[in-house]
Length: 280
Ligand code: 9MG
Image (cartoon, rainbow, N blue to C red; front, side, top):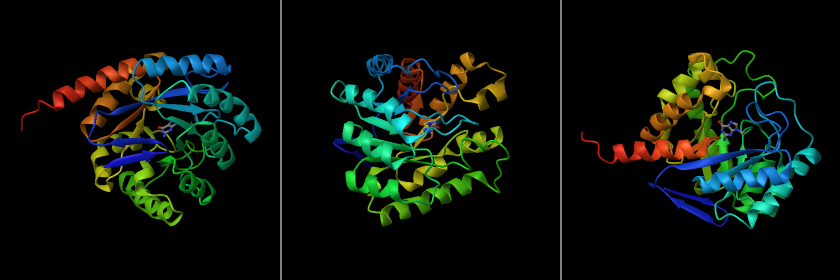
């Protein structure tokens, strides 16, 4: 299986990739405001790469539950200086976390290679045509509702079946827009319009998505379902997130999105070393 993202190519199977998170926002749930200044955001991204991040995800609009949308000029003002400065300094792909075609276009022109689309459930193909034209990588994430409303009353007959059907349908729709399968990463969207139970069902069924023959991405870092399940404060959720990441890698997930890159890389490498020595 191959993933193509602009000039970058990853051939799987290979060690799982960690996507380091750089939130250039005042209101993200765990690090809002820390990296709003471009210099601080760039320094943080460089540190994540040093710690082993093989993708850096830059976002200028919070997607935490209840987050208020940000206007395009403001989102551009936040992310562009960071991407421009990073592009010449790191050798790993930069991903732009946005649902806006205008932001994605400017970010790709400034040096990003992947579009992380947490609104892939939308019906408008403008972003997909841009991905086709630029040959960027594309994270197709499942969400029910929008960040503002998604946690009000998430409901599914069978969340695993519905997410799998969503992925299959989106792969077809993307292909209709000219996006090659090799550009696509699939992500079940943990916490995006899901209850704790829905999240656990998706995590327990990660293997169900491997049949689609595309790399799978999982984002659990510091998320509230860990806090709800274990009674853990925001700053005490790393062990819970690492447990999810290790089991996900064992189930065939190839990309883990994380704030705590050094710890996540170590946990994953340990998991992979054990998996390589497993006896049946
Ligand atoms: C931006 N963002 C926040 N959580 C995320 C997740 O789980 N996956 C992806 N792709 N992006 C996320």
